[in-house]
Image 1 (cartoon, rainbow, N blue to C red):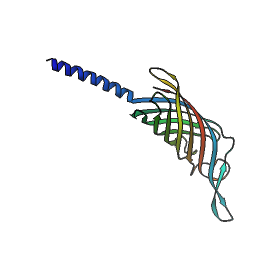
Image 2: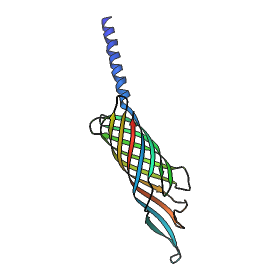
Image 3: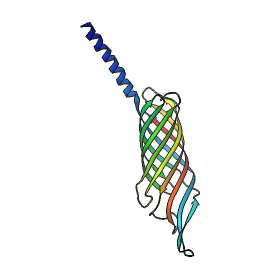
Image 4: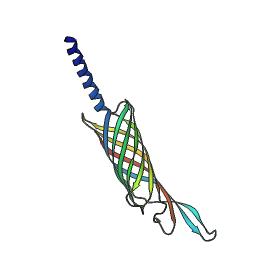
Length: 197
């Protein structure tokens, strides 16, 4: 009988520790992002009557507006210092104006543990809310984040990042006059403020 009680106690302790580890394996975060384009490249075609063909062109767009976004991610700690996750969000780019939903994956590498400074890579697909703006796109973001406030149930984090947004514009309205849009690439720096739960 004593052996059964000892086995039950050991199993209860083991299951309690196992459950606590499982809870700590998952975390999520919500971020508000402020993004400032550093370089914007617009690729397009122009009809040339001289060659009776469409000639490719490229233009750097100056005086682009800042953008803002919001994102939500959920992560699983694969190892003590590495987590994999799914990310979704919304971004609003100003001048030229694009609004997009994002869905993709994220990798976080923690330098100490998952409550301290980390580097991350996000790769997402951009989905348009208006097909006359763009067809589809890709966002690649690399950054570093660190907590500025640590509490038992959450951290308040600051993120600094560099990102590239490549939007496919084929078949959409021209941004300027009568050019035939191909794609536009935003290369930007940003700042995010988030809560990690």
